Length: 586
Ligand code: ARG
Image (cartoon, rainbow, N blue to C red; front, side, top):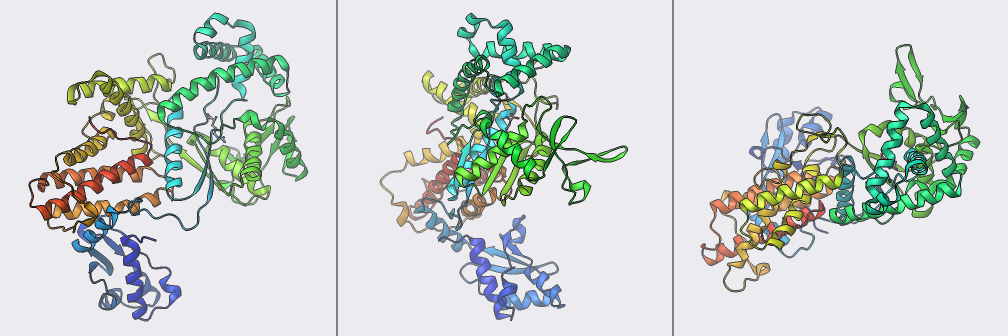
């Protein structure tokens, strides 16, 4: 299996340390990482400092001994910095060798994991009967990218769209449907009519407790199998699913399963019985609740909450006083199902940070029920408008995803009119759709998922800046070079030679692809890949400005063509892992 440069250097360093007399167990802990600043070389290790401290030696003296014993010939130069950092400056010929290797490597230097995991990825999960709004975009885009990256690394990823198709909003829609349904409007535009009904109940309920109560009753009836309510529900879900599917096609997002909350209805009673039997749940004010286990500190206990009077219980509800089950009950049943039917060992929930308490409670209850599972809440922040407040439409509603995508497409169309050389209208339309959607995705993925970001369409579709079109344009530009190459060049047979700094730097960035993709899954951060791609594209543009390709003499030209081709392949592959396609012309 292909080793990354960091791994190769680690091996050499460990051999050097062994020659200095350190034993196996110590060497296991020695690592080499990318330097944050190239002035300190490409890679660094703090091994000499750590080991000197443990052995009560002088760190610089140890570092010198290590440098003397470590053979990095043909690979790098070693230097000591500060109190005993070991810095590695990779040699141009080592980069050249690696780039030549990437040329024939379909995986572009990204190794498969040695221990594949079966990972259930729970993402998107909009609430049916309400159109998908822009808040769901974060979950959908982050989740889709994580599934692509997980699979590319060799994990067995099962994607599941846990639709909210059984909750409170159905009590509301059913109630309004019975009172106010306009059949004609429903036939003309089902989602709009469903939204109208939902709003009727939600506005009405805000002002009137009687309406709220009536909606709750409709929900309980539905969940207990009432035929009329079930028929209404089925019709609503049908319309909604068709609307959602249209959106997912546009986004290029697919799921292995669409197991909404409703599909766990039959399991809910069983879950509650087992919680009672295990002594985990008890009644409180008519509702059935899970309380704290009393194990950890209250600060870390999701079942305790600090009030002025001190710590109070903050239980998880699993059955309401009216007999209805809760969101949490469904999530517990869902874990049972995913373990029993899919053999899940790890479940990732890509959900808004506002649900963090829910997931902390859920994971704790799962643990107390005896599950030994790796459960993680892949949380994310809020999308903001230009005013710095959560994004809203002019009328104060949450923007609908479809409108957002249309706006992005239209903004991209404007850029294309200004900048593109294309003249065929249909081709420009297709490109506008591609760039618009890509821009929305890339903006999402280039931010740290926990930070809020401002949704600024003009910036997102700009050709300059940290944008998808910048990367897509970079790809197109590289590809266009090959249309002008005369004669056939067998890139795999070319001797890669790196002379100019800009060439070395581009090679360095290409080689880093194999080190970047795997770390995305450490903390579920696609932004590491997104920012890497921007840096690669910038390295390419600097190279292209400094180093003529087609006009260079044949040996140099061919070597530079290898750099160009590998850049295009890494851009294409990297973007595809973010769910973004590249055009051939723009
Ligand atoms: N439907 C929920 C919402 O829109 C998200 C569901 C997330 N997944 C889960 N297993 N709870 O807020």
